[in-house]
Length: 136
Image 1 (cartoon, helix red, strand yellow):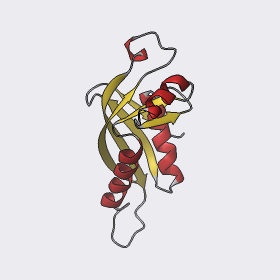
Image 2 (cartoon, rainbow, N blue to C red; image 1 turned 45 degrees about the vertical axis):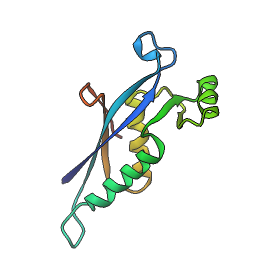
Image 3 (cartoon, rainbow, N blue to C red; image 1 turned 30 degrees about the vertical axis):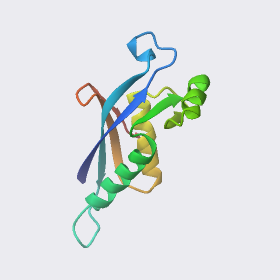
Image 4 (tube, rainbow, N blue to C red; image 1 turned 90 degrees about the vertical axis):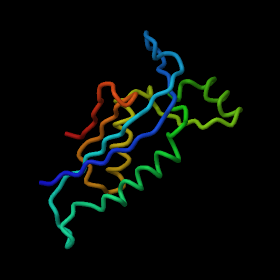
């Protein structure tokens, strides 16, 4: 079994609804996404996947959707509408935009795209603890 790890960095804003702590307030994060792909090598060129291609696809998706955006819970309707009325970039999740839920979202997205993804990790502020998501 071989593994390939791809790391991509971006910045987001978010806040956690119904959370009793500082993260209930709007704040920004520097985020590192760690994408781990795993499998047996079956290609003629002896690579698991095209590292440059997958990194570009991840960066393109992140840049279009999450980089310098407010990532919010769909229940945060007043704030979402306010930001949209000011032409601000907003991405809406069906849950709180925690590291755990962002990792899960990205895992499912790239699994659906057919990549041999093993797990996705999110590190907030480029240094805090990491939240991993992987399928059993």
